[in-house]
Length: 341
Ligand code: DAH
Image (tube, rainbow, N blue to C red; front, side):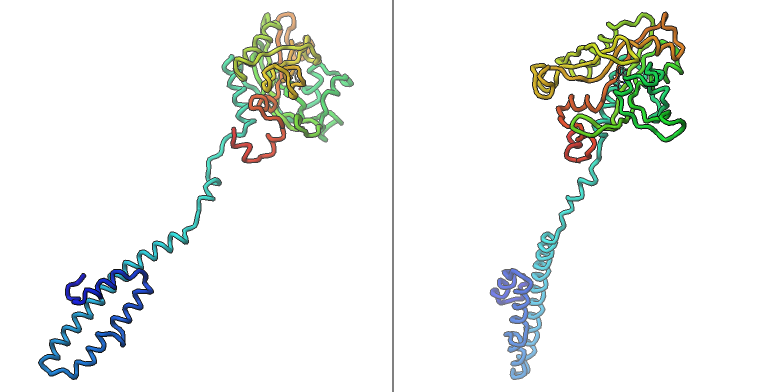
């Protein structure tokens, strides 16, 4: 504090003022019309001339010192009050952060990538075909002649193009087998992922638009044992060592013999629960040995070459691997669901 302020009490009152408003009142009290300084100034005229000058200078020095002390304290208090106001008025902008967060691939895309990676690791190549197909590729070449009852397994959506019911949205990825065999001579080791469509009602285990991944092997001396071994190796690679696979007799026109591919129920580990209807097994797809008629349809000599094929549903595999019980979760786009994967 400036030592020209003789009154220690004034200095203490200034430093202990705790707000800009309180300091304003103190300013009026110390320097205003009713102040001690004002009274002493008014009394100057009554002093003898030789005292007047000294008293005048003293009054001025005191005023300057008090003003300086007040200004210093005012600056201090104003800075503190400004900081407090800024703190109180601060906007919480952290709410926008989630929108800036980096996303990630959808669970179905992740699953397709993972399935491809496993098969590529086993020596398969990846091929693709069109979603809009002709009756020939989707049915006829796969040994479903017109009117074949197995066509009823597929609720087909037809496209209004060409002859009635000649163009359709592929109901499975098996037509890509035909396209691969047309383009490439054996040996063939390929997987074919892609979107498929059926005239189906959505429920907890069905979507009308879903993916499949098709597998095709054509080589010399390929047996059913190769199919079973390939699927068992795949099962362990995708689900882990404690999940087994089994093949059950079935029917598809394009394979003979045909089988359903089942894996140990991932929910009860084979003990039997509601999801697996107490069987301990879950059905994942179809498979079989490529029918000689199919090889013939693409000009491959069925006496020299043999092969196996399979078709799985990636959505269903994702559900099983992650213990999700409703396939609709995959298309609802609820961020709280999606961000878990
Ligand atoms: N395409 C069949 C379906 O969608 C699944 C299938 C079964 C594919 C047997 C195959 C196979 O390649 O060999 O129902």
